[in-house]
Length: 316
Image 1 (tube, rainbow, N blue to C red):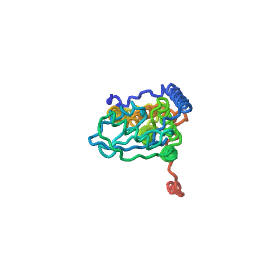
Image 2 (spheres, helix red, strand yellow; image 1 turned 90 degrees about the horizontal axis):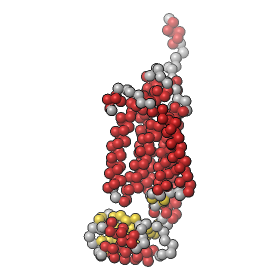
Image 3 (cartoon, one colour; image 1 turned 120 degrees about the horizontal axis):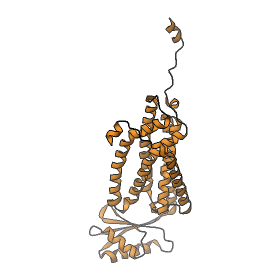
């Protein structure tokens, strides 16, 4: 395969651009429909709730603790170690009908009954919804600010048609990823925001590699239509795209399967985002630039400016 790509054999990717556009539009429409009806399943970082820290004499068995809490009606509890293997933090969604002290005692009794170990209450805190609203706003602004900065960067580096294709493909990746999270009601916490920002950077890097080759080939290939130049450019960078995405996905899949409940959402966001980003780098960003009418003349360097008197000196 690599020998074929090195031989500059062009694959006709743009032949499927219309089908890819239809597929992307359907996915974006479905994402908006899911977001408008179900919205997102916000985690405790955004909704607020109760935080309880307990201590064990021996390293805690987290799966057993989760099972005991679920059996006592606390199936939404988030359980994780805190500091050491003997310190456990339990986070719960807001419960208006139960006071914080009573809720802490119920959690403590459920853990004692389920594990049969001696458990000590360390602290109990309540995180109000105001903090959650601030985090929601800050997370949204972080993603928006990153997209604006990327727009400014690609506008300076590339011709506006390529820049528009890059930014629209990034928006495409984020919308579809959020739509999948909304459809399956996967809990969204601060780690998901970090994963989305990572997806933006990853997808942009892949797109810029392809666009650099497109700009280079437009200047080298004197013959050939724009779609042929884009097909050749994507074909030449395909091995790099597959190797980079493949090795990254191996790590992400390992985190998804073996990383535990705490980073499951983070790994899921990366898994979805990298897959969609790889697809968009080939079929969305480049195809959008082609639809916007990119040609060789748009990417040729400007002719050198002749200084006054140079023409007269040449005649002498």
